[in-house]
Length: 492
Image (cartoon, rainbow, N blue to C red; front, side, top):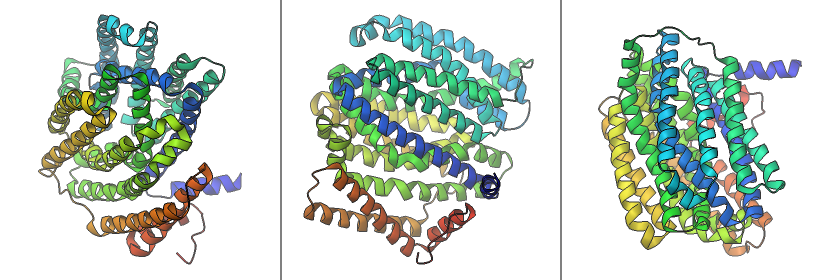
């Protein structure tokens, strides 16, 4: 008990942004690892063709849940986090969310014949159920997030995903297939919402047209910006499903999911920094925002770059052993999508910052333009190049989005890279690549243990070179590790 208290004390003594970022990163890594393991199980048991319909279900849910949210989720977080009239804004958001649910379900039922023709009957029922539960989870999650309870929101997301994965594994084991995957997804949503509700301190209150107007003004641009993100997140999946087969959808989605490891730090920092930057903007501290963004770039690239480089060298064998021989054909797609995740560091953090500093219109200009580019390229390239064409379209889209977002953000704050640390990251990743290429040349990658040994070797080489090359990163990581009570090796 004393040991637990000491551990908690060490964690609480860490700077709040670092602490919340660490919690977010730990939960993201843990969930993604569990998700990887579960997906490997699903692909081996169900095969390529069966996983595709589940990926398409997620794409449809993402689109119609966006309609049901209408951008009001982000607007509510922004208004609630500002600190005044929290209950009024929360209640207005709740009412709007319920009204928009009716709109999203009506839109879904209107295109039901199209979905049934592609996916078969039954998926619409699950979509409607997921949308209803999504309202509950979205309202409670945005409520606690707006209150600044980032850890609670992250814990709710963790529980959501944990329950989802456990139920999906059990359901697939007992032979429920795609229905088990979808059912586990819906159950996880509900449990995550219940957890957030337990810690939600906001209460219903009378609101006025002013509250609705303030939410609507902000949500309009959030909705349009989110629409752009949803389009280039799911348009490729839906169009691959339209032009090609469920098996192709599976290969593409597995490759995309595999690249999620490169986005661990980016996702964690985005979740942690949004309410902080919103408050710093309200308190007029632009220098704090600029410095935090620059550091966020560095720490995001700290993981994204080596994951991408390692994936380029070992990706084909990793797909082969982890997911099955049929998925190794996605190696080319994986290589492109790993580069997408590197560019995603800049797109994700810059658009988040634009929204947090009350510039959702500029965020929409970036994502809206990119979404149009994405759909046009998908329609042009998928029929010719297949899933590789979808990956190329996504890469170009990400570059366009990041470039436009930086243009608008640089007018508000100084947007810069920490050149020294970034060059050291590239140097360490280059050293890792040389070692892995030599390893692969000398040792045939004939079984999963040899491949995992290569991954471990690459990580060790990258870490050692980086620690020796960059003292600032070395010292920050050492201080963080020591604060957690973990011994730091003297030779590092």
